[in-house]
Image 1 (cartoon, rainbow, N blue to C red):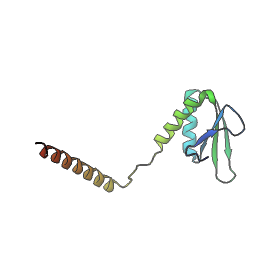
Image 2: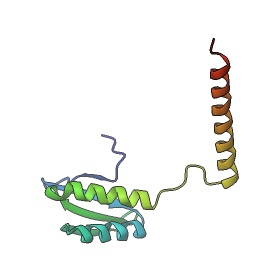
Image 3: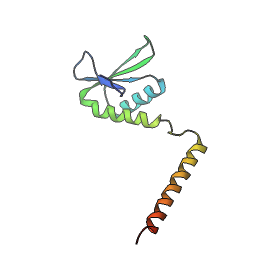
Image 4: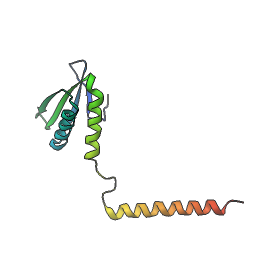
Length: 110
């Protein structure tokens, strides 16, 4: 099955989830959040093909771990449009279209 998240059920230990990170800074921040929430975890660094930081989380702490994972994603997210000029052009076009829609709506009333 195709999984787009960075976590899944542990393949051999029922009641555990495995969270995977490929960047050290994301892994460190996730670990910091787990420690802050008092979540117990097992940690392993897999260096076979690509360095992967693995965290084993008990099922009882799953919700806290997922919340921490969301915080990692939020902190390290990329902007949708990274070029500031392109971003402002998109804003201007959107506002222009909205203004034209409001004007045409007001003029079309009987």
